[in-house]
Image 1 (cartoon, rainbow, N blue to C red):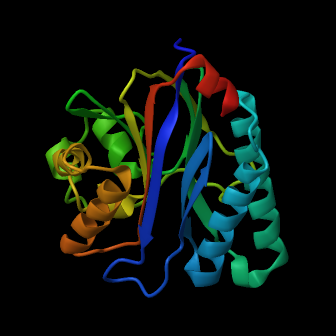
Image 2: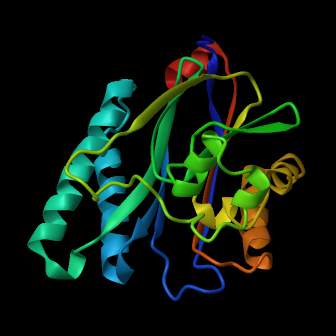
Image 3: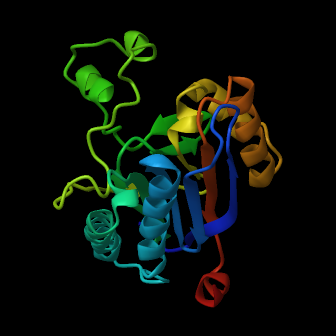
Length: 247
């Protein structure tokens, strides 16, 4: 672990896309915590579920205990299930959530659904999270090629989300970081229509992460904008001991 690594640049952007009439995505920039959520279950339900997930994560505050992330998603799941039972207008709501924070040179992540976390390093991009979807699981089993998965009719059918069942399985991951790494969290409005090489080129070719975020949104919309699209970008770099203590 590198204790001199910290978040040095953050950016986010979200857009309704070219097809949807409302945006049920949400992002969270609350250093050191970052997150994206993609709500589902109608206008009211999807937006409510995403908001409940983000609000639960916000309660983590500046805590850098990885268990706090897991607890936040478990609590959000319980609250979303209860709210859907109490209000018929919210029946069937749920949300994907991918969230994490950086502490002592390590990225700690929690993840449910098909929103993604990527790591960009030295001109390469790596998907850190596994999609919880029917098609992704078929690919992992070797029952479907990645090329065929891109056009499969069930590619957007997810197998896990907050609010679907009283018990939810949450992936928890850790990634050792290096100076200059960029972490991308995004909803499937980006990763669906835009391939990884285009995402990498947009990030590496931008002068700032704000510029990269705007370019990623434009790429998704230029590819048809089939869904809401939300991106969060975080750059990690070495800082002085004094700066780390101050911030």
